Image (cartoon, rainbow, N blue to C red):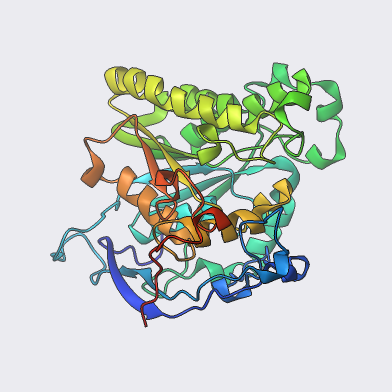
Amino acid sequence: MAANATPGLQIRATKQCISASHDISKLSNISFGFGSKRKSCKDFRSSSYISHTKPIHSFKSVPIKFERMVTKAMSGANEQVPVSGLPIDLRGKRAFIAGIADDNGYGWAIAKSLAAAGAEILVGTWVPALNIFETSLRRGKFDESRVLPDGSLMEIAKVYPLDAVFDCPEDVPEDVKTNKRYAGSSKWTVTEVAESVKQDFGTIDILVHSLANGPEVIKPLSETSRKGYLAAISASSYSFISLLKHFLPIMNPGGATISLTYIASERIIPGYGGGMSSAKAALESDTKVLAFEAGRKHKIRVNTISAGPLGSRAAKAIGFIDMMINYSLENAPLQKELYAEEVGNTAAFLASPLASAITGATVYVDNGLNAMAVGVDSPAFAGLDIPKDNKS
């Protein structure tokens, strides 16, 4: 259980003025620091629109400033302390988060928000990354990232080896079984992990799917192989079906599941290929169907969060995450950086009783970028009075 479990979460705003004035000509010098340290908007040096008719060095954006919302733990350390306001209270709940391999990304942020709300945290880590993750955790390399709003450290009750591409031991091919990256680990298929969690803890209340992989993600869809396409579907969408199928028997009624999707499921994102856009579309469709099935049979809610771009280590694989972050800054209704904890806080809400009537939903946490039909930083709109965030 998270140390000094608090009654819930409370959101308060603190002003943090960050300038996002930048020049596209400095794109090659961008450093997004995919480590645990976040970079502010002032580190982004490129415009999100590249004109084919005008010199790229002539395009600059308008400085923006914004308020950052931060999570503030509410006072009180036990269930007998009355809580004011409308708290997110997950005390007594247990969450299994599949897909955490470092302290930089949405999975980790979701774990922190759930822990801050009082939930006990279990983690499933990809087998080849397990040793590094556990070693870093043990040696305190994640301690700074583990700090919760009340000053305590997020506790992870147990880390399980997991490869959600395989449902049971019989599915694992010989080359994987003998792969040295899997040496020393056992019981890491979905059925085995679900059984291990049952033996160790009995039940869970929250299941989080933070898994995605497309071996051919940099290839256009029309050039993607059948093997690459099916691999993306297997790892990024069917893995959620498998996890839910095998964890449902140990989920308490009234529980919740959450997955992570991306706007490429419904809009064209050039460069996000290899079948990954199809996998995300499948995940969103499956969310609706599984919400009906799991709701009727088990009283479990199923939702997915469509998160905006984040400079995580995993996102670096697509090769242009910096451009997507910059595009969002220029074109989203809310001209501000998207923080991982904003997605984490949304997940905590969806997992809580406050969202007891929400299921089968795709919840956008992307500063409103999903609502835009055009990129307003295009030269085509140069003559229009486009609103800018110029708050001081």
